[in-house]
Each structure stands twice: as structure tokens, then as C-alpha cells.
Image 1 (cartoon, helix red, strand yellow):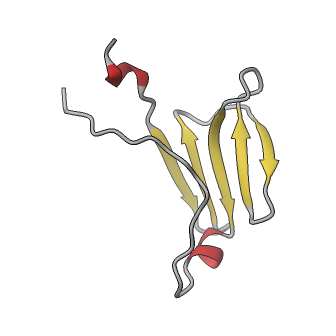
Image 2: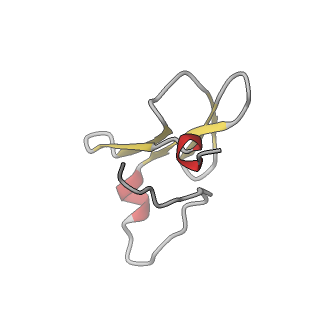
Amino acid sequence: MDKQKELTPIEVAYDKDADVLYMSEGAPREAICQMLDNGIIIRRDPASKKIVGFTIVDFVSNFSKSKPQAIPIQARFSLLQPA
């Protein structure tokens, strides 16, 4: 099986006016949202319950302090070779 076909690109967008970072596996789509205490919203596929994205509220305000902070997100990365 071709591993490149299994990977879905992560789309990232930042709304500067709202200070919100959006990350989505593939194109953004309908999802069930779960808000965590730290302003991170987990987005899940309604049918499979698989995580399909994250929204981080007050991104720069919360994550640009002088001390680095961890964002509790796990991801699998792979280097894709150009076709």
C-alpha cells in the first residue's frame, strides 16, 4: 500500500483579528466540538469520532509568552517526496 495515499495534509489558518488558530485534517468540515479548559477545541468526525482538527482560542495571547508552553496535540509527520 502506498503510504503517501494514506496521509491527509493538515490545513492551518490563523485569524489575526480573533486571535484563533485553526488546524484541520484536510479541508475543514462538520464536526463535534469539545472545549478543553485551556482554550483548545478538539474537533471530531460525527460518525467515526476520529479527531479531525483543533481550534486554539487566544493563540498568540496564550502561547507567545517568554516561557515556551506545550500544546497537547499529537501528530504523525512524514516527509513526502515530490512527484
